[in-house]
Image (cartoon, rainbow, N blue to C red; front, side, top):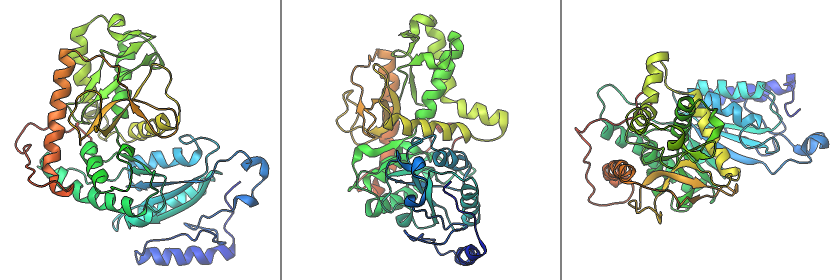
Length: 404
C-alpha cells in the first residue's frame, strides 16, 4: 500500500502546509520529502513490496487545470486508480486551482490521499500555471471561464483566450517538450489553438480539443436506433468545431462491420434527427438534470487519453480536435479542427486519409470550418497574427447548449 498513515510526527508538516495554504502561497512538494500527511504525498518506490512494483513503468506527471471542478472530481479518481493510463503506470498529479478555489483544491487533495491508490505517487497543488506544468508529460486543461448572462460567444472567446494564452506560455516554459495537451474547457477548439500558438517549444500535433464526448454521443444514438450494443459502432468521426456546427459522420460509420447507412436505412433520420440530436445533446441533458455533463465529459476525456496510448483497431478511428497543418482534406491550415485519427498507441497519431466526403458532408464541414476561421480572427491578437477581425458578433449562437 502506497499511503502511509499520518502519525503524530506527520501532523506538524500538515499543519505547516495548511498555514501556507491560508496565505495562498502555492505548495511545492519536495521530491524526496520524508514527511507524510495532507498534501505532502511523496513516496519512495524502493520501499514498496517488490511484488507490487516490479512491472511498473516510470512515473508520469499529469497536470490538471480546473482541478476542483465537477469534471475533475470524476476524472482525477479515474486517473489515480489506473483506469486511464493503465494498472502499471504510476502517476504524479499536479493540480492547478485559483485563489477562489484553493480551499476546494485542498479538499480534492485530501480525498485523493484518503483513497489509498497505490499508483498515486505524489500530489501537488498550486495556483501558478508554470508550477503546475513543471515537467508535465500530460496537461489536461479542464478549467475555463463559464459564460455569463448575456455574454456573446466572441466575449467568451476573448476572456478564455486570455487564460489559455497565459497557460500556453506556462506550458512552453515548464512542460516536457513532448507533453500531450487535451483542452476540455470551452470553447475548446480555439482555446487549444491559443494554447498551442503560445507554446512554440511543444509539438503542434500534441494539442487536442475534446470532441470524444461528441463521438460517444453519436455512437450511442446509432446503436439505439439500430438496436445494437454501442461496441458494434465503429469508424465514427466528428468533424469540425465543438459547437452546434459539428458534423457527426454517419457516411463512414459502421455498425457490426457494415456501413451504418445499410443498417439504418433512413437517410432522413440521419440528416434531420441524428445530426442535430448529437450537436444539442448537452442542452437536452441540462434541461433534464439541471446540470451540465460533468461525468460523461470526464469519461470521454479518459477515452481520449486511452485512444492515444492504445493502438487503434484496424479500420477504426477516434475523434479529436487537432491542428489542421498538412491535413489531407483541404481544410484551412492553422486552426484546431476535429478529424478522424488513428494511433499506434505511442501518444502520437495520424489523420485518417481514407474517409469518403460527399456533397452533404462537405457542405457541413465547410460551415464548421468557416466558424473556426472566424473564431481564430477573434483571438488573432493572442496568437501573434496581425490584422485579424472578429466576424461572429451578432450572429446566431452555436455554443453547445449547457456546456458554455
